[in-house]
Image: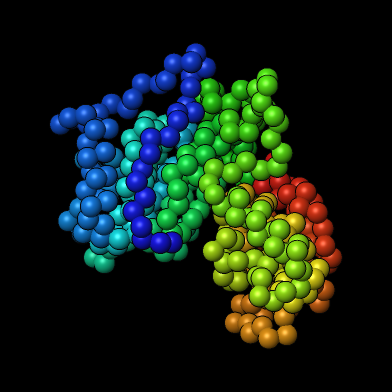
Length: 358
């Protein structure tokens, strides 16, 4: 991600209580109006990103919760942030998230984990690092059952974080199959028109054209569509990558080899093969839309590809020497579906829903 400051803009408030009235602001900590203080602090972060003496998430302002709350089920979703006050990108991320945190503070569990050298550590924060940390900054949204709804290293826009929190509140889901978890006694959410409805995916109102396909909260969706069009216009052109890293970053192949917290999608591709590019064009929009909810591993099987040891193990286990090949696994890495030919994105989406227990 670039280092250009992102000036936070107050987003519209989707958190209606069903009466048309906005909920009350979170209670301000002693010492002044919390929201006004947050905006003043955002200005400092934007003026001096990377200055270690300017805290990204001042404890007296955001009042973070105990890290252990992110490790056990609860009645609120978790916003988990890994930061380093001496890191420029981390401070710019904090500047974008602070207004959102203050607006939704009473609706979420907030856990901040300091990744600076010499920072105080606890058993809970160490466990969170093992489960979710990749680079500074890393942001995660976990639902009531502590399943990841969004997990992103590098800077992420506040709108994507807000959408993940809204989805976690409106659609908390059920305990994972095969566990001893009992369903949580969750409060009824006013954010969903009916059970299981995402407030960001409600049907169009009268006079509004119905939206087709996934709804994106950032320009990445438009970028995915534009790149898919390039692939369709020149399939098999090696100069046009099927899965650009900046658009759909791949997790390490080792993520396939042990149980995780999210389902896994493995795609074997070759940018010089027409069928591979056409498959990528079909998948891109869905992968961008779902990337916070899955572990995506893409492996180049072209003639010039070089694999590390984990990639070799994944190739030997799952690749059937046909390009493209797609494999879907559950979070525990049990097989759900595999295809050794081109398939529609709707088939992949259905397999992902099955892996997520929807």
